[in-house]
Length: 196
Image 1 (cartoon, rainbow, N blue to C red):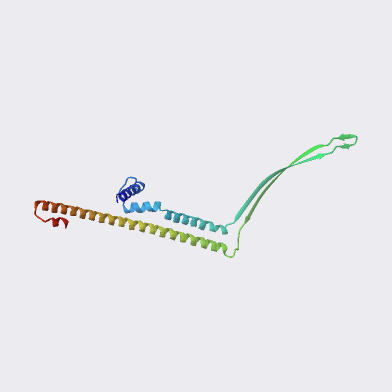
Image 2 (tube, one colour):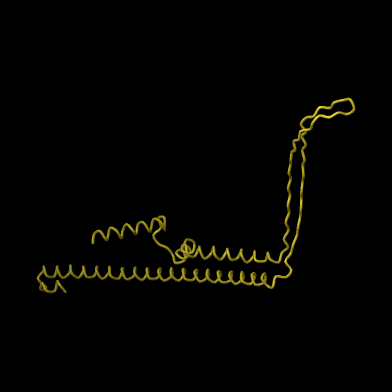
C-alpha cells in the first residue's frame, strides 16, 4: 500500500511538472486550449486537412496551359591528320588539324488540354470532396477532443468534491471518536459507545 501511494505521488508530480510548470490549478478553458494545441490525433487531422486543401488547389492544373522550355549547348572537337601535298613545285607538309564546333539550342513549347472527357472536372470535384471530408474529420476530432477534456475535467472536479466530503466525514468521525473516548474516560458512557 505504501509503495502504491509513493507511485501515485510521483506520477502526480511528474504530470504536474510537465503540464503545469509549477501551476497546480487550471481552468476548463486552459485545459481545452492545452489539449487542442498538443493532441497528436488533432494535429494529424489538421495536417490531412491542409494536404487536402493543397490537393484541391493543384487539381485545377489540368485546365491550365503547360509551357515547357529547353536550353542546351554542346561543344565538339574533331582531330584529323592531313598528309602533305604538292602545289606546283612546292611541297606543303601535312599535320594535325583541330576543329572545334559549338552549337546552341533553345526551344519553347506550349500545350493545353481542351477535351479530356471530364477527367479534369471530376478530378477537381474529387479534390473538393476530399477537402470537405478532411475538414469534417478535423471538426469531428476537435469536438471529440473538447468533449473528452470537458468530461474528464468535470469528473476530476466531482472526484475532488467527493474526496473533500469523505475527508470531512473522516474528520467528523475522528471528532466523534475523541468525544466518545473522553466521555468514556469520564465515565459518562459505556465502552460500546466508542465503537459506534
